[in-house]
Image (cartoon, rainbow, N blue to C red; front, side, top):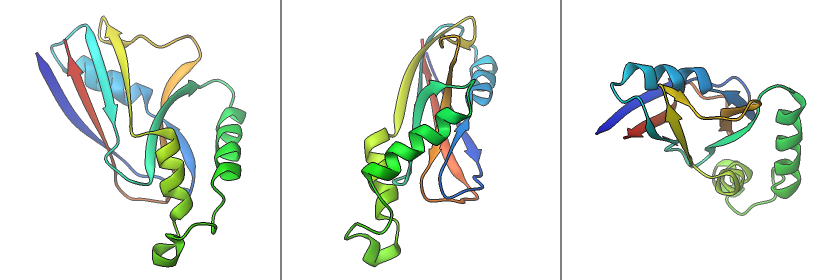
Length: 135
């Protein structure tokens, strides 16, 4: 069986990691599938998705700090077009998807883990996240 749902998020900053775990668990509960694999996919070239710690807010600053060092703003050929070359590179490093098992209508995440939408070119009014459940 397959279940698919699109979630829409707005972002407030140029760069941010936004915990979307509760919205994903809500989508899982909405389905009739109780266990399987949940794929979370972001169809944007300047955004991504990761699984990381949700307890210490410094993790967000640390992850973004490392990505800024790896892909500094203003240092890419693409910047001549629309000034967001770094966002494309950060998105490529992070990746557009995660697949996580779920059981009893909840993601099987570790104690400190959550799913985070990664914004690298915000703020944006509409960032789509596609949730696909497979039993």
